[in-house]
Length: 263
Image 1 (spheres, one colour):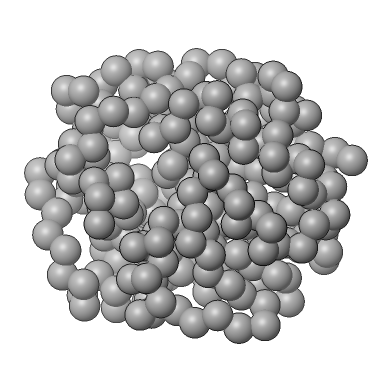
Image 2 (cartoon, rainbow, N blue to C red):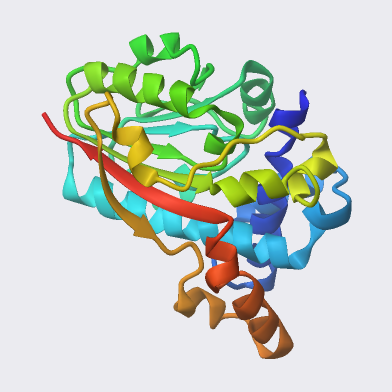
């Protein structure tokens, strides 16, 4: 497994940790996978503060996705960069076709813990070479999740994928998290992904950069650390997390953007 793929263990650890604590989100599958895989994180990547942040980020994606598929019974779900995430179990597919996409070695590992069925498939593929899209029914509405991957891709690569997806589907709702330019620069010196060997990342300060030539429109920015989730922390942990991750400094390095493409 290459270094970018190893980053999947950072959010997995975060979800397993909070699930054991009984806060933010419940994810027994993350607890199981983390205990059985035994991957060793080190340094900042094993920080409890980062674990809380990763769990809150996942919970915000979950909430958005559940709202989107509740509104649209015909939409297919496309989760790109799924890693070992059990989002389909946390959200509930509710009869929707759901596709989890990641690199081949990640999908191979994932098949130890998840199984395809009539509504759910795991596909090996790369966002930069989306031949796997041909495996998904076209001319449908789609809800696309890009969690924890945009920072490893150039803006042009993301734009090209959005154009390709736009030709495949009708209406599309898409949510992704992004580094800012400051956040990307900071990864060279102090970032948890360095602990698993990743040193090159990308960021943008303009969410509208992904509108250019793609047919998508920027809808709004989402808060990755909602107050009600921070309030599940107690005492000093609540105080420290709110100051470090819930404020303007955090937003200066990391953002979450929603986009839509209409027919």
